[in-house]
Image (cartoon, rainbow over all chains, first blue to last red; front, side, top):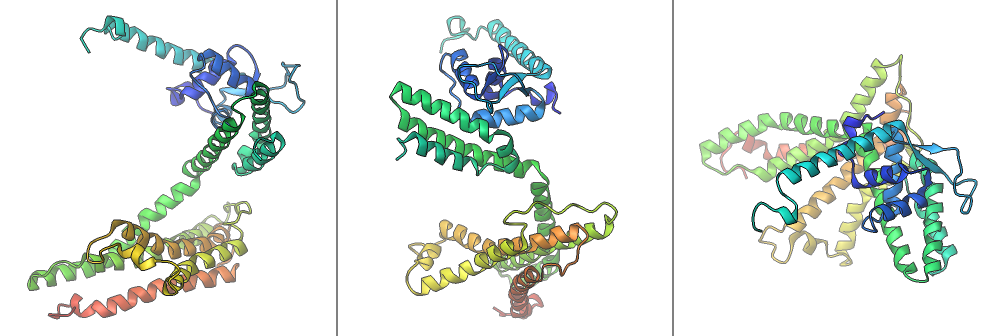
Amino acid sequence: MATNNNIQPLTPAVFHILLALSSGERHGYGIMKQVEEDSQGRVSMGPGTLYGSLKRMLDAGLVKESDRRVDPEMDDERRIYYQITGIGAETLASELERYKRIVTLAQERKLYPETFAYDL
Amino acid sequence: MIYDAGISQALYRNLLRFYPREFREQLAESMEQTFNDLCDEKRQAKKGYFSFVVWAFIETAIGIFREHLLLITKGDIMQTTLKTLGSSTLVSLLIISPLMIMEVINRRIFNEDFPFMLFFVLWLNLFAISLILLPIVRGRWTGIHNMANPVPTQGNTLLTNPKSAAMISVVLFLSPVILSWLDSLGWVPLQSLLNGPDPEQPYVPGQVISILLISIPIAAGIIAGGPIVNTLRAGGSLFAHPINLIIVVFILSTFAIGLGSLIIDQWPCFIGIPNCD
C-alpha cells in the first residue's frame, strides 16, 4: 500500500478527486460534477481519466468503495459510491500544506502579478 | 446513429471491454453508469450531445491505452523484456567482437573504411537469434532450478494460448513475404517506400520501414516461443507445444542461415585477403 510520501505531489486528477470526496461519499458522476464545481468549471474529467485515477487511488488505499447509497434520486442498486480513507485525508492535507508552502514562498518572493518584484 | 442514446451506450459498453481484465471487472460497470448519467445530462440540456459522445469515446480510448501501458511497464513483462533486450544486445556484440577486431586490424593495414553496415546486419541476425532463444533458455533454467516453487502458467490470452500464438507468429512471419509478393505484382510500392524518390540518397522513412520489416520475424519468433517459455518456467517439457517449437526452430534457422552465409561470404575479408569485397 502506498504511503503519503511516495505518491506526492499528487496529479491534478487525484487531487481534485480527493477534494471532491472530502465533503462526502460520491459515485463517479457525482465526483465529476463536484470537481467541476470545485474548480469553477476549469477542470473537466472524462470517464477514462476519472476511473483510471480511481483505480490507482483504490490500489493505494486513498479511497475505498462505500456500502452506503446516499443519492436516492439517482440510486441504482449496482451504483458504487466512493469514500475517502484516513490515508486519503492525510494525503490531501499534506498536499494542501505543500500548496500553502508554495503560496507562502510566492508571497515572500513577490511573485503575484500585482506584487512582481520586476517589470515583465 | 450516435445520436441514439441506446446505440452510443451499447457502443460504449463494448469499448469498455478493451480495458485490462482486472480493471474491467472492478470499474467497467461504474464507468458505464457514469457515461449513461452524462448522456442523460447532455440529452436534457439538448445541446452538445454528439460532441460529448465523441469526446467521451476518445478520452476512454486513451484511458484504455494508458491502462494497458501501465500494466506492461509496472509488471514482470517489461522487466523481463528489458532484461532480455539488454542480454541479447550484449551477447550478440560479444559474439561478433572477434570478427570486428579482425576487420579493424585488416582495414587498418589496407587503409579501408570500416564496413558498418555489414556488422550491423551480422549483429542484427545474432540479436534476433538471442532475443528468441534467451527467454527459452531462461525459462528452462527457471523450470529446473525452481522445481519446488514453479512459476504458475499465465492466463489464457491470445499470446499465451499455444494455438493462437502459433497462428499469429505464422501470419507475422509470412507478412514480409506477402508484401514482397504484392510488390512484385505492383500492388504495393514497397521498393519506392524503402528507397525513396532518389535511391542514391539515404532515405530515413525507408530505413525505419526496413527495421520494422526485420522486426516482424523476430516478433513472430518471440510470440511462437511464448507458450514454450511459460511451460518451461512452470517446469514443463520443451516439446509440450510441438508446432510452436517447429516455428521457433524454423525462424531461428532462417536467421542462422543468413548469419552463416554472411560470415562465409565475408570470411576472406576477416582473415585479411586483399580486395576481398
